[in-house]
Length: 67
Image (cartoon, rainbow, N blue to C red; front, side, top):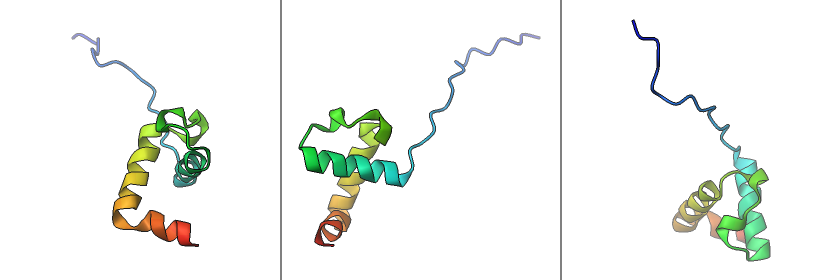
């Protein structure tokens, strides 16, 4: 029996919590920096961007800005 597993063993990245992602979106809105420049402490920039786009499309972001 071959015990070699060809699947790479990567440590799964802990997904950022929503607050971190929101803070990253807010950081980007305040600074005007490109999405790719969001600091790592806010999680992957792709996550922040996709959540922002979803919120922009469904009107959530406009409601956040109104408050």
